Amino acid sequence: MAKDLAEALPPYRTKVVEPIPFLSAQERRRAMDDAGFNPFGLRADQVTIDLLSDSGTGATSAEQEAAAARSDESYAGARSWFRFRDEVADLTGYPHILPVHQGRAGERIVFGTLLKPGQICVSNTHFDTTHANVELAGAQAVDLPCPEALDLDEPAPFKGNIDLERLAEVLAGPDGHRVGLVLMTITNNGLGAQPVSMANLRAAAELARRHGVPFFLDAARFAENAWLITQREPDHHGRSPRDVATEAFGLADGCIASLKKDGLASIGAFIGLRDAELHARCEANLIATEGFSTYGGLAGHDLERLAQGLREVVEPAYLRSRAASTARLAAMINDAGVDTVQPAGIHALYLNAGRLLPHLQPHQFPGHALGCQLYLDGGIRCAEVGSLYLGTLDDQFRVVRPAPFELVRLAIPRRVYTDDHFRYVAAVISDIAKRAAEVPGYRIVSAPAILRPFKVRMAPVE
Ligand code: F0G
Image (cartoon, rainbow, N blue to C red; front, side, top):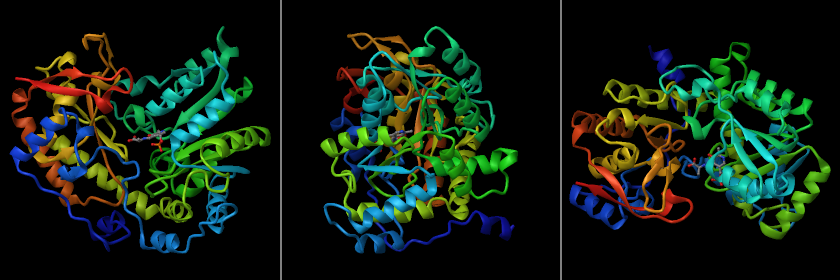
């Protein structure tokens, strides 16, 4: 017993703390009114537990802050850049590394350089900014998730995989010559935080190579994916997550990696490339739009935190305790009778709002309704992943084509919340489940033409 607990213990203790706000029910209701019932419109100091994103929201370590204090802020060729570059090159094996301020800047530079208008980018699932940057390059984003991913209750170990049969068909089919990139998102954030197996990565890489198509990783959660490979893929049991991550990077021609997640810092990303000519073209774009190629829009102290963060994030004790913590939260929520996408991933849990609130139809946005209720009842902030975000709406905001699922994402910041916070989150969800039929639906009051969730204003339908 003690041995099991010791194995799942976080390998750190708290040194610096930040107070969290507690508002009364009336204050929360007023805050939501002011925010147009959109959690993105809340002030962070109105939120008790913030599960909106795991991006840039983690806690840094004493070693990271010490490294930041030693940073070199020279414009070109700073010591901090070389430390960062060497760390990334050692982890990934890519000969060419470019720093960028966040993942989507890397997407814009790589897709703008690599993809031609009319080409296709095929993925297990594009993240939303990734999808947008493919389209901004004039190309088309095609998602080919594996069939198991569409069964939310199926506990298959690698529901982030790409559908290899369909990938082979697309590459060999009439549009095959238009495929300009195969991009694997690890872990698959757009589809339930599910991991991709090494076997699937290898097979997809081989297919792409056979057709002469570049194969890239969107490696925002490379360490969490590597950990799940060591736990769920028998050939890789007992391996170090760092080795597994290095092997995964080794299968690809390059990567874009937001480091706001597994870089354990609040800002930063990198592009990794094998091809010198592609590197030269991306570098020119980088210098024009992000900054010189030894800082790429980042401060030296950011590069230092990231270089140290990349060491800490692959420690087995850290990954084991983080995965166990998310799994315990999932178990508490499931015990309260609320279903989550199975199996639990690491960086987020997805509540099945459609099933919990069967009295609400997609046009009443059950995912959004559950998300709002979590805030109104408990000060918990999270994001809808359902028809508000992914559905097709007409210009009267009527749902023309609903999303396949009505979910709410609880994203888990790294090294921030404890089991006490999570017991509270589970209790709020449990109380909502007991009177689920009373949760009201929502209607859209106003919405922007693009990127709807961020600026939409909503109202409850009483
Ligand atoms: N790729 C994936 C898989 C992501 O999850 C994100 C960001 C990005 C790319 C873009 O990176 O934010 O550094 O520009 N995901 C955050 C989230 C925003 O909350 O899931 P970025």
